[in-house]
Length: 257
Image (cartoon, rainbow, N blue to C red; front, side):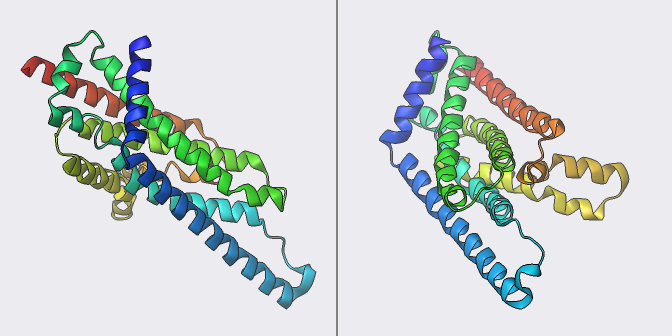
């Protein structure tokens, strides 16, 4: 456990020593805030128009729920672009600098090195989401939204991100080029994001299987405030498979070395 913590501390320092953390954090908060206030403005204009047309007799409209749901759907796309930047150098940079052999031959071990790096990237993702949550404070300052669906949405976003981080970590073990790692991770993530599109041409069990493989289809219930254990199992299993493949990739490097 101490070795995992040491690797975690090292990776967290490397994030904030390089400009990557600041670039990712700035871009995420800018886009998160931009879309939040854009969605909020759109809803306020809509409700104002409806009140002017129908008065107070119109149907009630849950502004915080609508704004949060639209924002989370947009955030899932933003993370699809940003997460490869968090994982691109986890092992690629080690291979490029020639320190991967030293890391793999120390008493730390492949699994501990893997978990330390993964937990560091997961921690940074949690920081991103926590910083984004602060942006939603106007909803609580000027209203009384139900916090439980919002919390469920952030939980789903964390699980979604954790799955993509495991995928990116695996890709990072395959190449010493960070650019290649970014492109492959984004490409695979986009493929898993769009796989449900191909389900429209399938029928029966095949369609169900394709829909289940879609990394975004399991996020929708979380965004609506519904926590379904089947979706949690999917993301946890996805992350486990990604970490397992990364571990096997490291093991192969140890044997080759």
